[in-house]
Image (cartoon, rainbow, N blue to C red; front, side, top):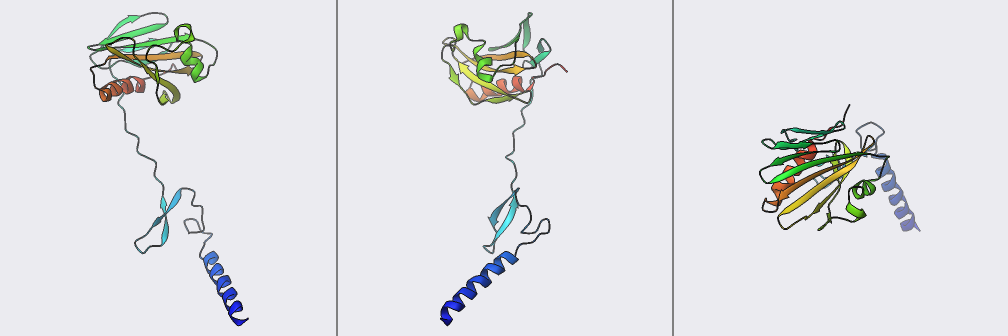
Length: 196
């Protein structure tokens, strides 16, 4: 009986010691640790470590001519030129690619409906490959690639914004390395602005 009592007493003492180690003080081990995760210190005990967000690489926005439809704008890469300007779309051209900004006024649409709004007969384009969504102007945007012919790749990003469906199509020669194609697309998307 003495052994059982000693074991129970030892277990209760251990529990009290563990509970007593907490603190109600900010920054103490009993405080809010929602932004902290435990990590091993050199002595082997757990200590809180702040969780830092993953660094986001900085993307430089394109600095070439501005395409503007209904106050929604993107820039093409430097040394490219604007090739046409119409009521619904503007285009720019570079050595081995084009950028087309197309905008239509419409009621609010989901990303999927915004994307399909531009599809011929509501069918995906040839070689359609959905990609992970991206961000354009602080808003979530769809992204897909397609292959309109044997020589080019279309990178298409779009969304619904401020009463308009917006599509940015960057068509590049397939012989441009994939990483460089993505850099060009990202710089155009990073330049997106809406009217104030």
